[in-house]
Length: 360
Image 1 (cartoon, rainbow, N blue to C red):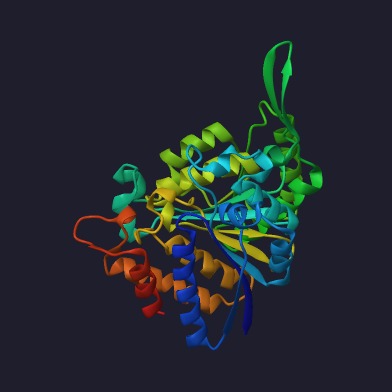
Image 2 (tube, rainbow, N blue to C red):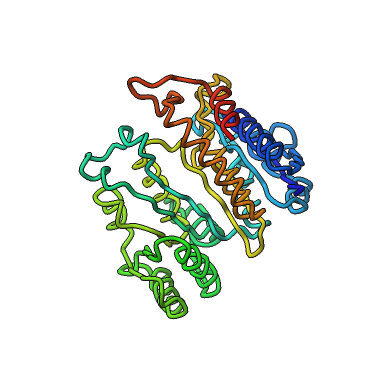
């Protein structure tokens, strides 16, 4: 099979971790008889430096022509980088918002899974982590507060800022369908998270999700307020299967879930539209403080590449091979610095990529 992949190496550690994911994909192609065709585009700070904008129309067209997009990380140090002196619509993250909108990537899937080998890195008490957990946060990605109208203005000598949170019934319905469909392939439970005791948008969310649940009688639906969910993720993460939620709540909860696993450097993500097309990226940021030092953890990006093979190319066997190789490397006690523990062997970013590729 020929896999046409648009690659966005991005900023910070992005180029290093994407290089390792490509190394693993090339090994998969070699072993299983596929062809990987990569086309690089710029986005984020790298695009600002080269083109003056975080994402060009040409780059979007290139991405649309591919079967999938594999991305590193976007952005820099918000305190010191000159990128953050620019107007908001010209900052690195604006490129990310734009590509999601242009490619209609409305569903974000972020798994949070506790590897047995990394249980020691889990910050929770042992009696909680011993139960293990395997959840997936399904976050609506193109609506809500991040895409609403916003303005900052002066009124009677006082500066005010306004952000608008809007959701329509069709936007909620399509993400709910994705949530129930994914739950059907997992443990058949959806926890819909909202703030229906306060927000009108959440009350609509709850109503639409309840209506959709009627089409999935085999899936259990429960509702949970977002503040309670934030507590439950720490208290009893094993209770969750698919957490279905809106954009900002999903942004926050998925970061919390990732830290509960012990390392955000381990967690992949996929953003999907109505077709097989998807954008795949690690859940973590660009970590500019460690860029170029060969100490970044490439596993999240490598697992994102596995998700790409699974969801965009239907290559389940190949995705399984990558995931098994990652598990084997961890079992053999190789660790990057962020997941290092006593008695393990510390390796750099490039070496970790090679170790995983060698086990496919």
